[in-house]
Image 1 (cartoon, rainbow, N blue to C red):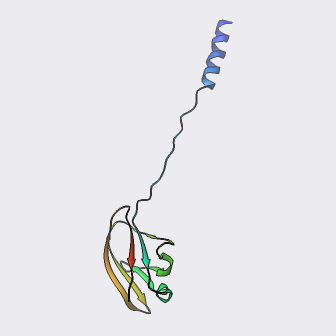
Image 2: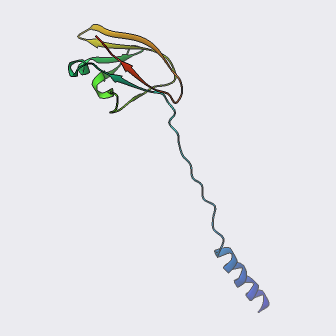
Image 3: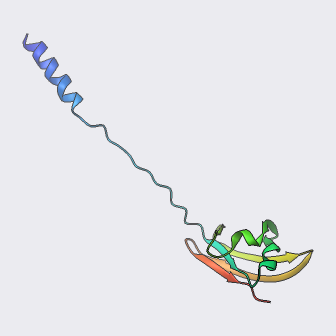
Length: 104
């Protein structure tokens, strides 16, 4: 009887123990790049970063959304019909968001 009581007591105590929980968060500290464009017509320019096309620059306008890149030095070009309209070399550090002002 004593052993049964000890067994029941151990089961009750084991049921009261809360299993540990783990909370994991992933932080995206890649730098962001957005553009301040002078007109809506320039929003159709093709964006090239280090020679790779990222589509129309209009989708990365300041205040709307940012293009996330890896940190380091990048060559930014805006191309319209094969003609380079804007070109700039920039450095982006980790966690830094930058707005590039495009002026004619």
